[in-house]
Image (cartoon, rainbow over all chains, first blue to last red; front, side):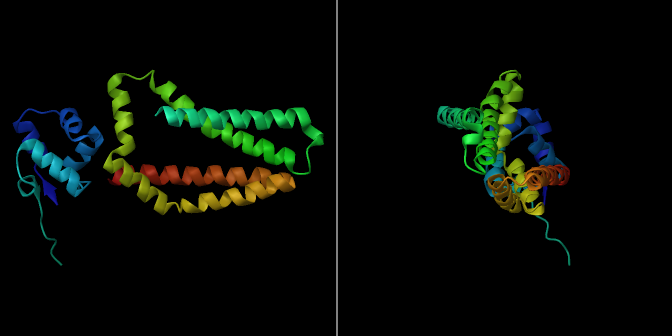
Length: 67
Length: 138
């Protein structure tokens, strides 16, 4: 799973702290999401997508792993 | 929040009363009474006092830091780290260690009274190690 959080955030000139405040998580969680170390829950993915005014699919990109 | 502080204060007060009972009655207590009252008193003071001290310590932080600490309590990544660390360190077995500890206090067996808390502390250190490991992974 990859995501466009960092890209969207930079596009809109939003800091990690501002995004963390808006979706009620710690800044460290935003850092981990952007680095791809942590996969957001459906609830958090929904909050982040809504914050950017996009759908979950537009923010989080699901790539099926090849066997 | 106030209810939590009230309960913590009550626990600490009961702990102090138990210590007082040991100090006043001492030898008059039945066999194992001294160990049991001291042990439970200490545990209650530790638990209650800790929960009272934490908000006081947080008052010294900046509003941003305080908000971050409060948020970390329910933040889903932090919860995931705590859950996985607990699973990896067999955290449930920590509760089992309190059984020999209480038995040793009732029976007044000094070796086990010392050994059990040491193992409990090591168990907590093992949990903290896994917390660190998972915080690097997630």
